[in-house]
Length: 375
Ligand SMILES: [Fe+2]
Ligand SMILES: [Fe+2]
Image (tube, rainbow, N blue to C red; front, side):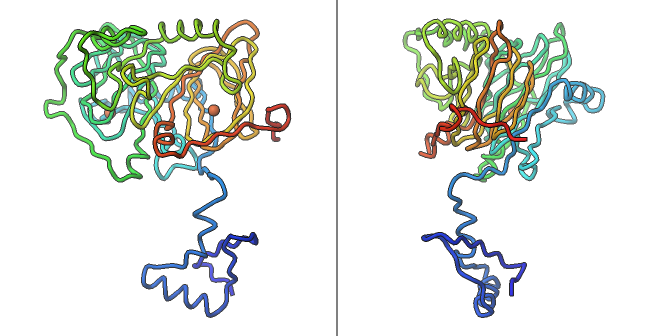
């Protein structure tokens, strides 16, 4: 009776679709199919699950495994030919959309001293988090920013941007984070190469940091109406100092330790309209409790060693390792050191979840708030 070409997702629960196949119904479904139509009750339980069902799986990408392959790409392709010389993180559940997790893309990009990538603009919002090397810089709409390890820089949607490493620098590797899969899902992605291939620097180097980077201070008569933060670079020194100072004044979050969001200094909101980012510090020996929430998260270990438990599986991490937490997956973090703090950089799609009214959060209630480890 069952026709393998016609799906029927039945659930024996009041209020859910539970229609058994009959020869008459199967014929009816077949006729609907020929008109590019179908009966909702055959797929309703599948397309409206009881709770979010991420097709992404939790993954940890070890930097020591990937680094040599990233460096090898320098010998294999030029930035001119590749456009962007990047090894991207391909979640086994999201290969069809080249996502690292959910609707977020991420990759590792390498550039040698003196190399410059061509300037371009796209509808996807992007960020970079510097992993190693000296002399990296990014130019966004004429604003040049110098970058060091653990610095975080924005290349917001629609801005002209290009990356390079100064001739006096060293080979640099950074993590890119973009919402390419989301913007493609929304069928709204444009990509433009700069007509001159490179853009001119129009301002003093690091001018946006000098203008917008002082905590609690805003220049007189400053105007900023764009949808992204005018502070395009968030440097590691002041970020780490802020976490250490905040740690003196707070117990921290049960689920995240000492966590601070990178924000747009004009609005106090997320750095870009579709991507949020934060840095969190786990104090020596700290183990957080588990929770889950909607939204996809990509973590990079900025400092220290420890582990995270994601949907019952333990992932041990070291500096520069990257891991992801899919939407609605249980997760908790632990600092393995009794003497050193550990810091995790994160970017996520929380601004999308929050602005669309889709954010939900839940604490893990059993077992003292900690997940049992699954074999
Ligand atoms: Fe780009
Ligand atoms: Fe979380």
